[in-house]
Length: 250
Image (cartoon, rainbow, N blue to C red):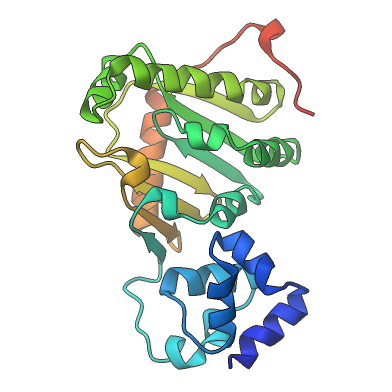
């Protein structure tokens, strides 16, 4: 029986089903955690973040004897589709910066809750920068071929994503640019939190690994990826749409 976890849930006024929904796991899995089973590290970190406590508070027997690979690494997911929705939606609680660097990022653009949250953060003064691939560039065509979906499909995904991002264009502080670079990773940043989706030749990004980093200085791994983001941003061209095409977000 994990009394620490039970107490933390009570303090947060959450139930096992709430945790299961936030982490996209079966409620029975959360029940097993409450009954004493120790979750995998990525789930321990996600629960600790959700309850706003430290991992050591919930699982002192593990956290006290474990030795992290790096203070920056919060979690490693085998595939992007395994990243809990709570992690993606937690990113839009940023207070300073939100950055998205990918080819299409259609999975985010189609999530209305995330798009609504990004719009709210932008209105609150958070700087939002979105970098998508130029659908007319040879780099995008090559990526489509690499993923065995063909150049036209990748370009169509980007145009679809751009259409879904258009409502954000009417908000001050939001800027969208198109890049023509060969991406080795997609990068999703919210303040000090950075998700790095590795690109593997011939493998769709959704099936590739994702590393969740927490930037703790200017010399670490997260800083390297954020520097890469800035390089692409500088070389990208602004995405401009006609004013009449902009729909004001609700």
